[in-house]
Image 1 (cartoon, rainbow, N blue to C red):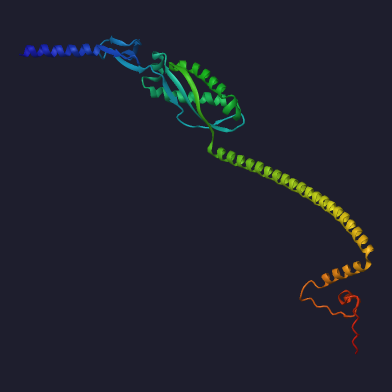
Image 2: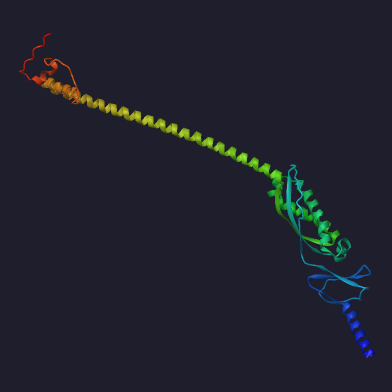
Length: 297
């Protein structure tokens, strides 16, 4: 019985040792075999592989997929105009040389990110300080990214990685500068608005003055034409009256008396104190009427 137990225990031990010598490399990983702290072999092809059992050899795995490094902090960068900008960036990278990567960073990806972030920030700092705000924001933005990528390509060899892409996600001013720029833009817009209002008011006054002038001219011309027509009418009427009155002077005198009566007695409440025997009432008395005797004192 003890012999069988020993055989089973030996078989299990052999299986454990055999299992410790086999490892599987995934297609998304790179296998690195260690022997007493020294890198012996790098396995990049996926599949089943073998090694010596621990502690003679150990294996660690590195992710060979594309990694993304985002800017961990927003430290200001000064432009050529001494303006502070905050740049959010990202870097796409992957492991290119596993041996070099492990020698410089170990097997933890976070070690590489903590060391690569200052390098990226320094590269952006060197490129941004050569350019103005307008260049960084628009005209030379692609050139900044390309120059930073070229710098990182050389620096990345020391880390055992390959830089695939560099992007700028956001460019903004520091908070206090943003407020001052907003205030300046607001004052400039207000100045433009006030200038436009002044121009509009001046144009409105000009249009109103021109309209008033045209109105005065039109009214004056109309009054002139009306007076001319009225004068012509009065002249013709006077000519007609003169012709008619010249034919019958008595009728003319009678007509004028009626016009005087009409003008004098317009309202029933009108009162006139006149001698009845005056020439004013001659037409009312008739041709045969005698004037009333004058009142005696």
